[in-house]
Image 1 (tube, rainbow, N blue to C red):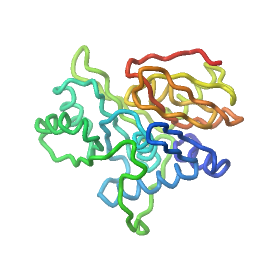
Image 2 (spheres, rainbow, N blue to C red):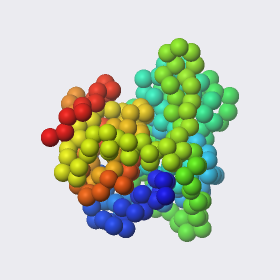
Image 3 (tube, rainbow, N blue to C red):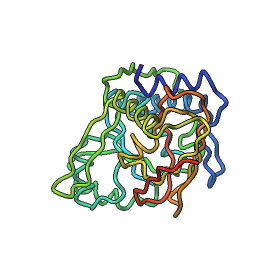
Image 4 (cartoon, helix red, strand yellow):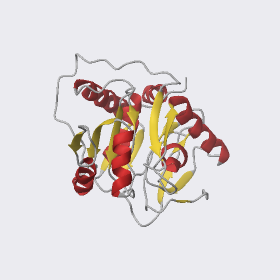
Length: 263
């Protein structure tokens, strides 16, 4: 089954206490069991806000603990994640916000002013939620027992990305769950990743190589997450199989540099 939800659930069942993320700066860790539960909780919170299956949800922030969970959790829940490019010009940002039909944007205080300026040129209401991307939790406790996540299939849309708009207005591209999972499989095979490998990657999650390439591979294990440091970071791959391609997000310098050397 080629869906994000299937593979998150599979890892949560097979190795629930294994770390999925280690975030050094905020000193936080996230296990696969916690990842699954947080994905479910996020989806139910979105449903409670009137966001339904197939709706677009965006974020505007650098890589971080919560960025990772938003990226996976929205797709897990049957909605479409539409990351916003932090390098976009104001006119491009306004165009993407409008054209994508995004319903909700998670944003950090650092990016809030740019987002609000862009929204002034959008002729519809878009909800924004200001968060700390490295906080352990971003929502207060709530009763979500009345909400149930919709089903998810391989052909359902999962990710909406836009081009940079170099030769015109940005072009949007929808990737399905099957596309996302296949991307992880290809990266795993192309780089011959093994459970003991350490991958060095420096990519922002809103870029396609981070969302479907550099951060997606089939050997599920611990990921060390750093926010825009001026150096590459290390991710140790621990699981013994390559058939489990999860979208495992980590960050480094915002220079689109990918190292193909594993030691």
